[in-house]
Image (tube, rainbow, N blue to C red; front, side):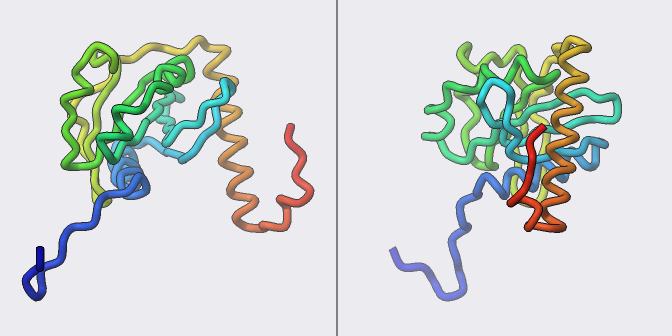
Length: 163
């Protein structure tokens, strides 16, 4: 199908676009977020956010139907956060997230594009044990600081000692 002059199709939203929109939403709500956080169980979050009280939120981003239907690993995130959200690209049908397998009674739903996001369904709060919260906040803080140091001086990576 030929397009008329001057009309361009909208490009598909990427995970980075959705992450940007969610981060804008979180910033307005006083949360700070970091992408791609490895968890102690071997999984990696798309976004992990912390609020001023130290509550941890994990966000799993989905930009296509196939990606959403093929995700079986997300329950592994729930032991590492106080709240879990799905973040869907604007225009993606969220109906599947209402089914039992996606735990709509506990998981929240955010719809986002690259300019912003909106919470469609709040996530239920399941408080982390104090010892786990302390360990996770320390681990996430150290990860963020390490990334900041490496951004300032990439040569540090050659001799980095994990602790």
